[in-house]
Amino acid sequence: MTRDTSDAILNRMMALHPKIIDLTLDRMWRCLAAVGDPHLEVPPVIHVAGTNGKGSTQAMIRAGLEAVGQSVHAYTSPHLARFHERIRVAGEIISEELLSSYLDDVYEANGGGSITYFEITTVAAFLAFARQPADWTLLEVGLGGRHDATNVIGRPELTIITKVDLDHQQFLGETIPEITYQKAGIIKQGVPVVVGPQHEAALEVIEKEAMRFSAPVMAYGQNWHVGEENGRLVYRDDNGLFDLPLPNLRGPHQIGNAGMAIAALRHLGFGEDACEGAVTRAFWPARMQRLKKGPLVERAPKAELWLDGGHNPAAGKALAETLRGLPKRATHLICGMLSTKDVVGYLRPLAAEAESLHAVAIPGEAATLPAEDTAEAARDVGFDTKVSASLDEAMADILAAEPDARILICGSLYLAGAVLRENG
Image (cartoon, rainbow, N blue to C red; front, side, top):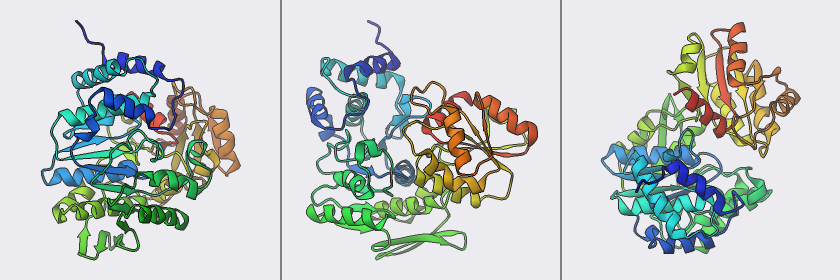
């Protein structure tokens, strides 16, 4: 009997629930029980929630653990080029053979019951993590936290809440406190929680939830401090000081993400070697990623090509700060966004950092914002703007005028994924 490919199984799963997002845990409990409750058998869990920085912080923790010989499972979302990227088994992206096997097992056990795509694939990830040995399991929340499909671990080893900001308001609430309440739903009874740099209103909600569950809080600015001093990353807590290289993930915001990773590693008992590995060995694609090879780079040999998948106002601000820190060079944006995002809020801080913006639609995405709408929002915040029919057309237009330009492709992880697929 020939087993279906993972793509074929994933396509079948899309029909099991009419909504892409439906935040509740009832279907997860049912499906987990049907496959033997694998979430109870995974290695010790570090659970990460937040609006921005989840993926980067998790990548740094993984790099730090692996630097000292620890084996790590990791679950992230969304993927960029292939679904397989979401599931790392003992450090390696899951193979097609294992992925199709676990997806098939879960699909059959579910018996056609109503369940979302993210829920059933999360169950498959738990199955993979339970059946393959490792020292740690890193779980990144998909959306929110309280009712997210990953929030079925009764007692993780540690929880982490990265910067909470406005995003996904249609699901999580309109205000920072409302959104934070959802993120803080990963806090568990007696389990320590590392808290990154936060709005005051967010920190108040997190501390209130932590007190309710007697969860020790390790908060930035209170229990640990991190910053850049003389071109180095300096981390301080009650146990001492680390003087480390700056993170190899670019941008001032990565200092805070590195601080959370170091605080987590320190709490887990790891020393300077793990912490240095966290900041020097982490790689996280489409987070101010410099493209150095591939067809797009070959097409623009004199240009500097960058890719970033940030898509909310806080990400726009962080990206603007990153651009300001780069050597001066004529900078042009190619931007495509989803219709559900705050386009003006994302673009406003970037307007002062680029000469122009070429607006594109995201190829293959039904929820893409039309390029004309992105262009209109960009003009409203001060960009010199042009509508392009495709990424290729936008690049060609920029390069015709300035062959040695800095080109930043930005606005959506879905656009970033399309770029990475095209660039091989």
